[in-house]
Structure formats: C-alpha cells, structure tokens
Image (cartoon, rainbow, N blue to C red; front, side, top):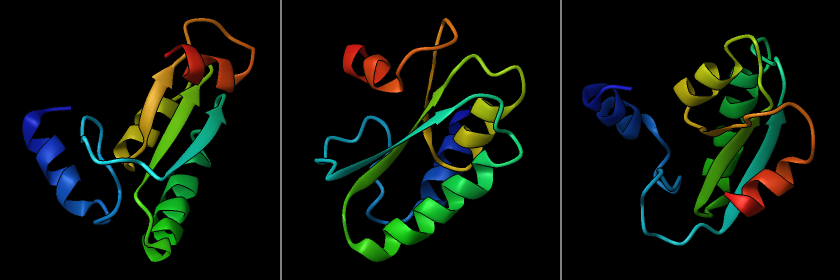
Length: 100
C-alpha cells in the first residue's frame, strides 16, 4: 500500500482501532482464520469494525490467511485488518500468531 493510501486508510479507521505499529495497548484482538474467503472477508471485517467501534475498547483485527489462492488477504487489508500470510497451508492460526 502506498503512503498516501495508508494515510487515507488511517483516517477512515474508528478512533479506538489500534493501527499496525501503534504503541497503544490493544485490549482486544479479533483473530480470523481465512482460506479463500474473498466473498465474505470484507463484510466480516466491516461488521467487526462497526461492532467494536461501539464497544469502547482499543482493538485490532488480525486475519491469518492460509495460502488463499484468491484475493482474501488483499480484501482484508483494504477493509482495515492486519494480515499474516501463512507460508504453508493448514494448522492452527493460533500457532502462527504465537510464533509471529
């Protein structure tokens, strides 16, 4: 993503969403494992952002992309989630996050 696009994306994030690299404490991490979910991931991330904006907690949305062959990771990023791309298919997303 370009610097201009990152700045525009940051302006559209809910106030309490903690952007990547921010040093504020994250109170809630929403972990979404995903494998070829391009049809659903965008609406899922938007719905979570809408709900969490009302919760009053600092949060992040983390999508663990399990080697999707579609645009799952790109759509997740475009809608404001942080994305970890797995180098191999399968296994627990929790293991990826723990080792990350």
